[in-house]
Image (cartoon, rainbow, N blue to C red; front, side, top):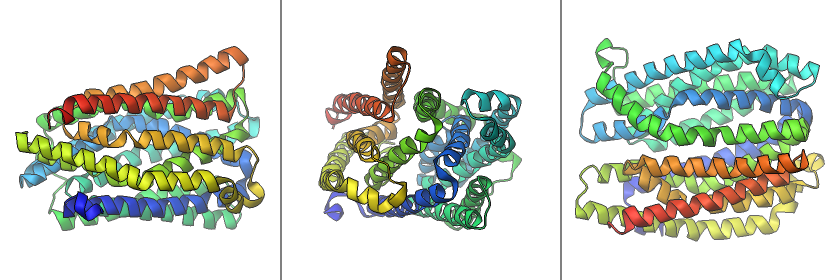
Length: 438
């Protein structure tokens, strides 16, 4: 079925995304019980606080990662290796500068960061101890992500996907081994660090095999490339900023108006449902560089091809998404009991079901999102991110304002509602700007 819908190279990239995400889902499903077994809900909640800081640090990305993929794809398609080198090196310099500023902020306000989550004295002390390391890791992650994005832009999204997936295995295997030997939360920090070291080395090797790129050259720094990277990246960053802040915001609300021990319930349900969504969404990510390549010369034939790719992508979502989500919704409770065993709590299935419905609704907007982004219509993507964050946060704040407390279920319903509104917006914009043109 997929062979009839898409070209060979696009099929390879799409399949690799789905397969790698399936591996990631298995790794995640393995990791959560291990972490909860050795750390418990409270200590694991402390790590998630640290992970939230790492998520905030990703603001230093400035949307450069996707800009690198798109612009490198354009240059590589034209056979311009010099242009590829300039975009990559310029992007890395931008990210190092932005990451350094983020690190300074983390180190300067680490006490305030620990205080805002309303932790106990022992937990706050642990967060303060690990925050400088988290800050350094955040800078390194930005650079590694840029290299991985370069690999995608060079047409080897399959290698980029498998590299990231292998990195996750390294992280869980390392952290699990250290936890088994009696180490604490620092095991997860070490595991994540080694994961990105692996991705860094593997990305460099694959980039060199794909295109003989010379990174370390002063001549690679280009003001023109800097302007284009920031123009595309910052346009997307504006909306992504709010979207990236949404999960940390929800964790903060749960920490202050519920309890830090419920954060893992939110985290597992949210991440678990997003991993299930990613089983299909990961394949659709290949639409952006494909649409960008076709749309470089936007002839009437190119417009029709893009509209055709979008329609086929939507068919793919329904073909695989409906049976997968339907089966999960029916079998969710016994699957969760089998997975979490003694760590299973009664409220889990309800929260997970809400999250699952929300991610399926989100999946219905993914083909439109990547099609619009591939055509460089960044404004619609930005607006979609803003709608998602604004609607969800407004509902959460309203609940907190009225009842002075909030539950994981309420946060889940807020996300579902925001997702439905966002999907409607994306498909409407795509119908007006792409389907009519096609």
